[in-house]
Amino acid sequence: MRVLQVFNRRNDWGGEDLSIDDTITILQNEGHAVEFWVRDLCHCKARVRLKAMAFFSGIYSIASARRARELITQRRPDVVHAHNLYPLLSPSVLREFSRNGVATVWHPHDQRPMCATGLSLYRGAICEQCAGTRDYWCILRNCRGNLAESVAYAVRNTIHRRLRVYQRYAHVTIVWSQFLRQRLLQEGFPPDRTFVVPHPVSFPEKTADPRDGSYVAYLGRLSAEKGIRVLLDAAARVPHIPFRVAGDPKGLNGDVGKVPANVRFVGWLDRMKVPEFLRGARFTVLPSVCFETFPTAALEAMSHGIPVVGARIGGIPEAVLEGRTGVLFDAGDDEQLAQRITALWNTHELCRHLGAEARDMVAEKYSTKAYFESLMHAYQLALRIAQK
Image (cartoon, rainbow, N blue to C red; front, side, top):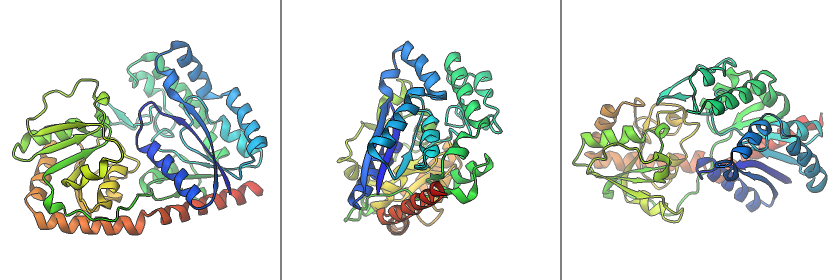
C-alpha cells in the first residue's frame, strides 16, 4: 500500500511530531511505501506578510489544492493520512483527495474542531465557549493575545465548522482517545467513521524498578497549559522530595515565578537520553490543566515500569488508571497533587506494583502491533468508502 502522510511541521517539536514519526516508521517496517507532503511553519513565525498569507491559506489554499491534484497523478497514493493542516495546507486538500477518489483519513491531534485555538483553554482554565460553532468567543476574549490573530483563528474555524468540511471530505477520522472521539461525536462527526486508534509506544527490553528512583520526574513541553506552574506549586509544598523537570524552557517565556529549591530543570533532552531520565524516577507527574487528547509522555514512562501521577482531565484517565497504573488528582489542585506525591513517594511497594501493571498494560494495549492493526482497519474502511 502507498500511503501519503500530509502535515504541517509545527514550530516546536512535540507529541504530535513523535506520533507522525512513529506512524511513518511502523508503516515502513511493515513493508508499506510512505510518501510525504510536509509544510514547515517556522517561516511564518516572524514575517508579517507570510502570516497574512497563512490566514488565507488556512481557510482555503488554492496552491495546496493544486498540489494535491499533482500528487494524485505523480505519486498515486492509495491512502492519504492527513494530520495538522493549519495554516499552510488547509482542509482544501481533503476535498481534493476525496473528490478524486483517494481514500482520505484525517487524524486531529488537538481540540481544533471544537476550539479556534485548539486548546479549549482560557487564562489557565478550561473553556468551552466555542462549542456549537460559537468561535466568535475567540475574538471577544482575544484568546491569542493578539486581536488580529484571534480574528483570523475565529474566522477560519467558523467557516470550516459551518461547512462541515472534515465530516464531508474525510472518509475516516481517527483519534488517540475515547475522550476526543466523544468530543467529535458531539460536533456531529459520524460514529461509524470516527475511531480510536491507540497510540503506539516503543517498548524497552529492560524494566526499571521505581523503588530505586531518586526523584519525581516531569517530561514534556514547559508551558502553561501543561500545568508546569501547578507542578512547581505542589513541589513547594513538599520540600523534602526532589523533582527533575525535562523540557524546553523556551515554552515558559522566561516567566515561571519562584522555583522551589527542590526542583531542578535539566533542559531539553535528546530522545536517546529520555529512557535514562525516566528510569531514574520513582514516578512521573502529568499535571496538565488542558484537555490532553492523549498522554504520550505518561505512556512512555509506563513502558519502563514507572507509574504516573496524572491530572483527572481529558484523555489522561484512559491511561493513568486510579490504583492500577498510577494515581489521579483534580486538575489545577496543587495541594491535592502534593498529597498524592507524598503518599506515593513514601510507599515503595505501591510504586513497584503500579509500575509493573502499567508496563503490562502498555505491552497489551499500546504496542506497535496493536497500533498497526487498528490503523490498517481505518485505512481499509477508507478505501471501501472511497470506492463506492
